[in-house]
Length: 364
Image (cartoon, rainbow, N blue to C red):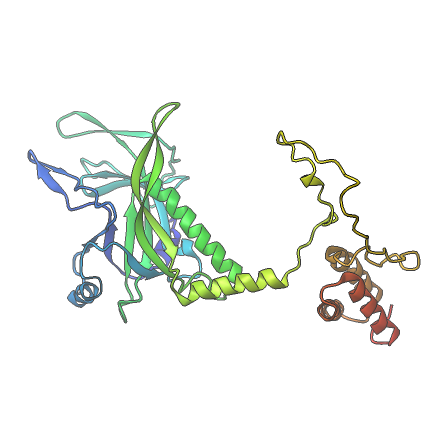
C-alpha cells in the first residue's frame, strides 16, 4: 500500500533548500559539515533552477545567506506544507525512510538491493532501532534512522514564480520549535474563522538563539545554547493588525460568564499561601445589596442580571420547545435582540421577551 504524506500530495516545485550550516568542507581527505551560520540561512539551490529566479531572489535579499525570509503558507492548513519522516543516509543517498508506523522504503546501502518498496512487505518502525549492513570489505556498519523535518515556504516577493523554498532540518530542537510555531499560526487562523485558513498569512522565517536541554546520558541533561529555526506572523503586516482588532472586538462584545457571584471576593480573604487571612470586619464600609427580584411568580426568571448562561441555556431552549410552530432559530434571534437592546442584562432581556409574548409576537 502506497502511503502519501500531506506534503507529497500537494506542493509547488521546490527550487532551494534552506540550510543552517555552510557548505561542506574537506579535512584530511574526508568531507565534514560546514560551520553553523547561527543567525543566518544558506540558500542551497537545486540543480536546474531557472536563472531568473536566482536573479530575482538576489535582487531582493542581496545575499545567498539571508538573516530572515518574508514568506507565506500556500495552503489553508499549515500541516499540508509539513512533512516529518524518519530517514537514514549513506553519503548523500537515502536508503531508508519510515513514518511513525512503518517503513516506506529500505535498501541495502552497499549493494542497493531493495528490501522494502512502497511500504511492502510490512515492517514496523521502532524508534531507536539499529540497522546493520555488511560493507564491501566485510565489515558490519550500524545505522540509525533520524527524524527529518521539511516545510515548504511560498515567497510572495518572487512575483509570478510559483515555487517553494524548503526548510530541511534533522535537529530535534527545530522539530519541537517549528511544531509550536505552526500550531500557534494555525490556531490564530482558526480563531479568525477565515475561509482561506492559514493561506496567505505573512510570516517571518528566521533563527533565534535559545537554550535546549540535551539528554547527554540517562537521567542527566545539560543546557545547551542553540540557534533554532523560528516562524512567526509578520507583526507589521495588515493580517496581524486585523487579527488584533478582531480579538479586541470579541473581547469587548462577549460577556464574561461565571457560575459564582462576581461580587464574592473570598479569595482575597485567604490566599492559602502563608499570608494572614483577612476576616470580615465591621469597620469595612457597608455596601447595599441590590434588591433581589421576586421570583415566586415566574420560576424562569434569572436570579441576577449577569446570569447570561441561565438565560441562554435554560430560558431560550424552553421558549423554543414551548413554541414548536416557530423555528428555534427565530427564538434565538429574538433572544439575541433582547440581550442587545437591554445591554446584556439577563433579567431585563427576559422581561422584554415576556412583553413580546404578551404582544402576540411569540406564543408560550
